[in-house]
Length: 300
Image (cartoon, rainbow, N blue to C red; front, side, top):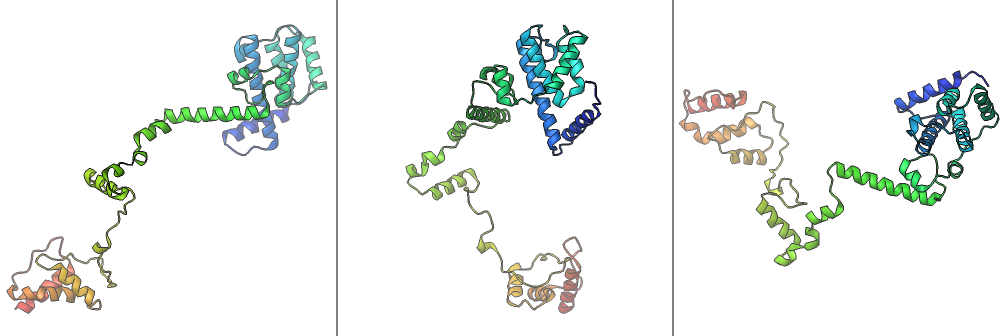
């Protein structure tokens, strides 16, 4: 019975590492994981039936305790065999060394792989106990596969609903109660269309009706001009009619922007002198300075 468990230990370490790093499990690691979960479910059942909880329960020295101990050891044999002697001492302290060796030899000679439904019938597991302990790898004896499937779906819906309520999300009934405009249709009572009612509501609230295109109106978009503009292009100086500049640039795109500025400034050039050069500030760049110099020369 004594054997080298180094392979099982290394497999357990690899399984823990894969779970911690959230890697895809191999078939062998999947088998070990299901075996660990099955042992956890068995500890839940035996802890409730024999008292003491899943950590401190002990099997009685009778036929029922002996059979349940063998079932537990059969699962340890497939997932964590090096712990079997310690499990006998922990769960069956009434078993002496000879009896413990006999149990280990019996489990090794007659190993068994239990299916969920078969194990549930052997343990006489009821649906109430299955739901109470939240078991995952053992099926209740009084439920069919379809009933278990529907029960899992129902519990999943309830769990997700509770999670949504915990995050402050409203139920469907509460949402419809707070947003019943589509059902009440207040625009019919006002004798107007739905779009007109929403536009009036938007004006009252100072916003825009739902679904309205918030882009600039086509009448507000100026005609594009394919004239390259320098990054240091100055803004239009004060006293210049911007509409004339835009009109000139639109009608004659081949004319440079300096010429457009000069044509717009020419009507007021007669009142300028060489000493009327504006004070330089952030709004004047090199192009503006050149335009003022030229206008001053024209006025002189």
